[in-house]
Image (cartoon, rainbow, N blue to C red):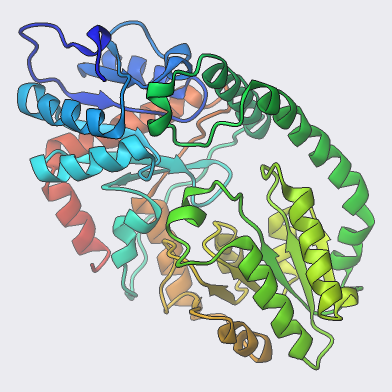
Length: 428
């Protein structure tokens, strides 16, 4: 239940920005600072000690409680101290799902951040939500393109993300309180498991580069012949958990290899595991076992490393649930078959999948959609859903925060006309 630490100061009045959870690391601390520097009053909510570790002490309030407690607290907050806008990272996190629902009820705009749909050098910044909740889910093909922004050079982003993630989750699990667990956005593995898992990410990535080097050279040189690329996702990915339309990595593996066993050509399947999947080795072994059982082991390749852009450009098609890797395929004019709810799930730009038979059809014949429609869609995503920046690279964190502040300012000044104009311009 809410304790003393959750009580707001007496006589508190409305304020500009309610900051909820941010990405692992100090980005929201930087954003908080930039908002204050631009004259915005801010209230930051921390849900556990790891949030507090990367938060400013000023204007920061601690919440400990269940999802129901949070709903009650936030409803009272809207009534007593209605903020002008709520800012969050990840619109599907438990605390954020509640916040989005109540914000809609009380007419408070939500600015939701996420990893960039296009990487690297971009972040996602949308009004209302991301992925399956993105305004661009209502996109329709139009004849005109819109002006898009260029990405930034985000050096050391991956290494910094892993370092911040290791510190964040280790500290969260080390200081874990049972009352807080219900609002955790990622399952808790415990201090020992986390201590092993994050160094293992670096070791596996290094080992994978060495082990896969010759295989990737063969793939890129065309030595394996025609292939479909199938990027795997992390099992804890909110997109995979909540917006997959019932599909999982294992189901996609089973159905793709089953379809391959009926294909009479020399087509190959190349599965690429996700670099942050702590069980990538188990998934790779599962793929090998399924391919052996179906009698097509010589036509199935599993890799853990390699640049997605290079692998995609040489492929003849990509099959995904809702991985952002599909944007690489769209860029390279490679046909895409998608099964989950994704921002790019539009018939004008990809092939829409429903069941395993759609994989059989895709293997028999596939073609990229209209280049005009794809270019229009990507430029629209860049213009309306992305900002130049990175949450983790120390070199660009400040300018990223400045870009987000500009978007927040625009939303506060023009909401609800902001979303209406955005909708009109993307032909919603």
